[in-house]
Image (cartoon, rainbow, N blue to C red):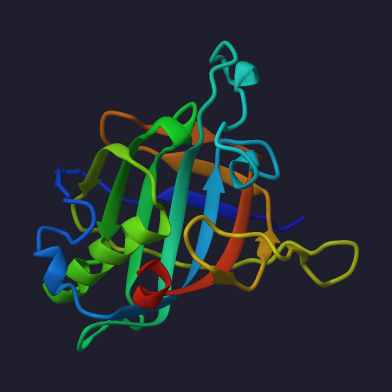
Length: 218
């Protein structure tokens, strides 16, 4: 059975603070924006991740965590088409790793975003403005890591037929439109850098394409 293999190939993270919302700009000056993106996502939760039905992630007694609840995740992003004012976001790739914590209705633990070196400053400003709208939670820490190359490769996991298993009509966090959760349990879901590395095997994984614009959040 083919599965997605999700791991973060980034090194030497030198984090800097990321201001949520308008990424340090005057919120009143934020231009119109839009983004259609595809994500290969995996996390430490059991299949299927309960965070899309509840604010409390899976318990992890089987992982030596004494039943502690958390959702430690990796999200490999590819922007299919997008814009931030006059700045085009088409083709931008980035990576988000982090932990939603024990109950993200009360705030989330941490997240870190990593860009490919080719991403311009204007594109980064756009992405770091849009991403908090997609994940409208309060982070204890949200940082930008050192640039790194990102390989975005899809290997579909078939269902009973050659077609994938897809969950439809389920909202993806703050994004109002998506084409369904294409389920693919991960082989390895890992983040091996920084002060909070993690690794899980055979846990939740899926691919999804969502669409969001600035008009959706006004």
